[in-house]
Picture 1 (cartoon, rainbow, N blue to C red):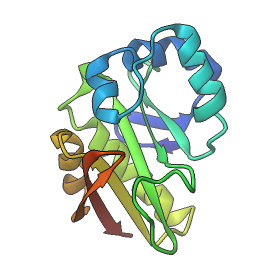
Picture 2: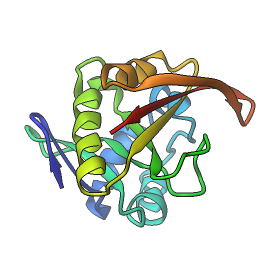
Picture 3: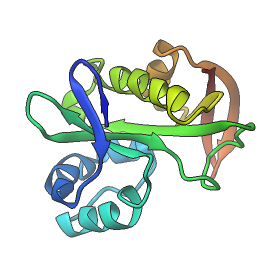
Picture 4: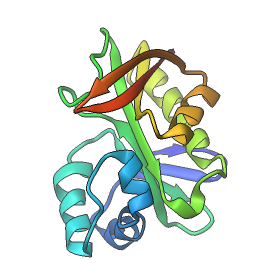
Length: 166
């Protein structure tokens, strides 16, 4: 578990299915995150069981004030990266529900997650890749000290890669 001022970053639980569906069913979120919009609570349950929970480095962003999971941050599973990592480097992915955009919560989560990666996982650097249209995600990366290192195309999508040395 990772704690920040307003958030707790903790492993996903099957009981998070309704909250996951609430935010992952919003196409404004899924389109920029480049994954399918959730169409049912059952789909969210499947994602939890098959993708989030098995990834020990995938954390729910939970608001301290409500206890609700409102987003996700974690390491992209090895071999599934969007950009080739260097030695001792991993790719970070994140998203947050639309009602929480532009409140600094994703940057807060990323700063806490970066400290965890440095102190607990002994990583030397982190990558972030974004769809080039996802300006907000790039701003989060830069606000947290990541530098733009490449414009590239992944699955026919113009993308950007950012890196930070921890």
